[in-house]
Amino acid sequence: MAVQRTFSIIKPDATNRNLTGAVNAKLEAAGLRIVAQKRIQMTQAQAETFYAVHSERPFFGELVEFMTSAPVVVQVLEGENAVLKNREVMGATNPSEAAEGTIRKEFALSIGENSVHGSDSEENATIEIAQFFSGNEIVG
Ligand code: ATP
Ligand code: MG
Image (cartoon, rainbow, N blue to C red; front, side, top):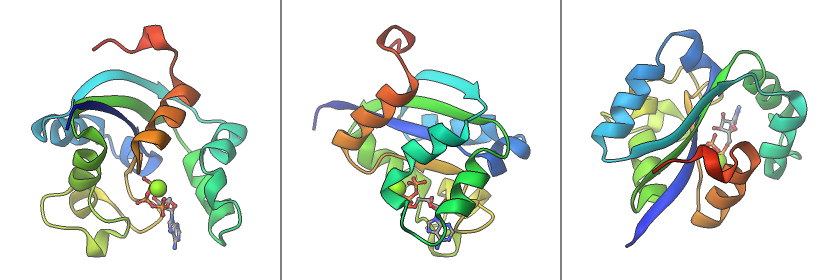
């Protein structure tokens, strides 16, 4: 498996509790390199675009409201097999099902307020990175 890039978000429940550094420590310990990072206030339009795949789900309104409720940290992570590696270190969507040592097991509050996002495929990573970063902001 070649070196890949994936897109990550440290969500409002984590930024609110000052866990940016703690999350980054977990990512780096897993062998992921943070090659771009910025703290932003996501707009409603950005959140709706980002989670458009879930627009018909009952929790969509709640999800958009949550993602715009406080600043988030958007990131590009790089490493061998980065998409899968990040999903592993994140843990399951529902923290009660997340494995020991994962970010969501340790920090997430609920299935909604689950501390981090990570791309689920290399194809989606490319799309998500392009929504938030221009090429010259990513420095490997
Ligand atoms: P993410 O896309 O944020 O990395 P994920 O891929 O693990 O998470 P998805 O199924 O893509 O999970 O859901 C996207 C997000 O929507 C979840 O991370 C969570 O914040 C929210 N979500 C998912 N299911 C529910 C639910 N049943 N109730 C409330 N929020 C939910
Ligand atoms: Mg997802």
